Length: 175
Figure (cartoon, rainbow, N blue to C red):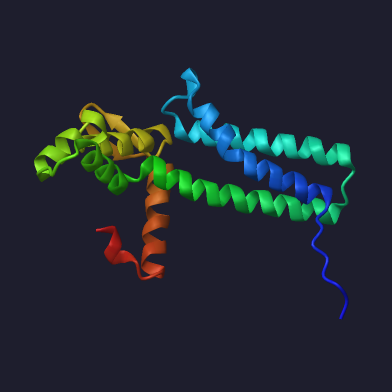
């Protein structure tokens, strides 16, 4: 049996450096005035910056196609992992309750937790935030005080989601 080799190619090295730097870029972008509170934009810009940097580095290094494919798979996998973590942190409503209790430094009743949630935004913030997202993506339209699925995109998405829930046996979790 031959010796094990633990060296990587330049393309993979660059991908690992971009992956390691990603949280720092994301954290820096989150502090820019124009991007504050815009989590999806922060993540998208960080991903684009990392990918463009990686492409520029591998073009300069004249990497082999095989190494480029591996580096791209590493980047994509890392972005998906970071996206899951970012989504949990930025939209982790249960974790938000824990932070509310932590900052209170004393036991709170359910009503007081609801009132203090998100530094005073209250639990109604969750529903407002979700509805703004649905309206912003064109899945739901607002008509005065009522909301309705948009005729094509909203209805199609709801039908597909309902089918997937039924097909995977998850229908009970959606109610």
